Image (cartoon, rainbow, N blue to C red; front, side, top):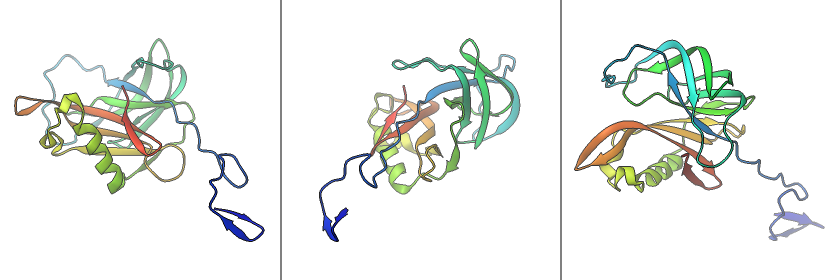
Length: 199
């Protein structure tokens, strides 16, 4: 609403107009994989979240579109509530200590540009419903709602408004022939009123 001469006007305000702050540009998000450098082993079969502190390296994946990560970055594991800062060198970031979840398929992390402020927040009920609706439509979960049973979500706020901007999940990542074939993660970012999966 814009007040002109004491009269309320319903005309929409222009972004950046009088008293209207333009929305911030979306933050760049990359996906990384934390490798604790452990000897070869069978897949972890821990049923519950089992984090341990470990040094290692985060391999930052190159996105299908957009620039590759470079320079200073912030590494975040939303489910474990852990973050670290580092520098990308030949596509990887060395970390002296990070949290490693000893569950199969929970080695993914969110990588953000260096200096990005990160706050761990609880996703709202609306966010959870939107995330579930987005995931169930993926080919990986074959539109099977049961594939979302036990889904875990961790959320971070990166623009300081206290609301989730990036959400990482852990749960079934491939549903086929009536059962969950593998566990893993999805990373989603808020784009306006929608949630989209980071590829």
